[in-house]
Image (tube, rainbow, N blue to C red; front, side):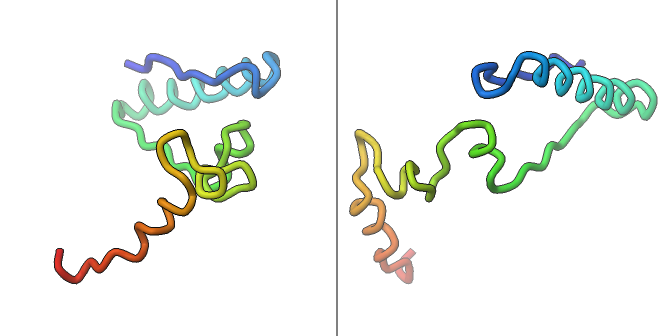
Length: 87
């Protein structure tokens, strides 16, 4: 059973959110009821988060550049110097 999906409304207008939700629900309804399929795979690509207002990994405000409260950019960069031949 399809249970819906969630979009953070502050990133898009409610009118657009409602239209997207209705369109997606109709597509899923057609697949679920007419094709008798109950498993779905959604493929997304790079950039989908930035269009939604979510910071990217390597973007100007991304984790790679700014770090987090737990990791600094230089610590993230050090991970690429590990010698993986012994693993």
